[in-house]
Image (cartoon, rainbow, N blue to C red; front, side):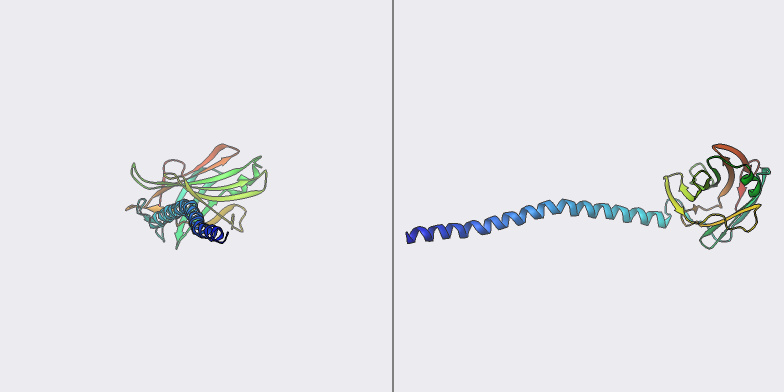
Length: 205
């Protein structure tokens, strides 16, 4: 009986470390793919962020000190000005009082297109939207080559009812060797009703 007990104890002693080793091995295997996936995802995200910030594909960030002016084709947008100061894009649009008088049922939006020259030049779309139905506003910049976009807070900073003015970060707008051109359009309840310039593009100088 004493030998039997020793034999059982020896067998149990041999099985315990094998069981423990097997358990740890399974845990490591189950955690490792998740950890590897997470690392891959984080690395890809970091690479994407790095590429966006560097502007290697699209050029360099929009230069400070640029400005432009246009005459529009309607009293809804008779004239507009744009300028870059530091890392900010300033936009000033006349005729804002006439736009508000239209009493849009759903929304109105000013759309600024910033275009790099050339057939392969990147275009950027700046939407300044007032959702009149909900009372919400939105400022958004989209890279039309990648569909990457950023939203920004703030809206109309003008004390003059006849002028719409805003300033938004322009860090995601890049330019190549030449200055980009730009155009403005006003859309009310889905219909484009005004353009600036009235014909063609305006220049950043």
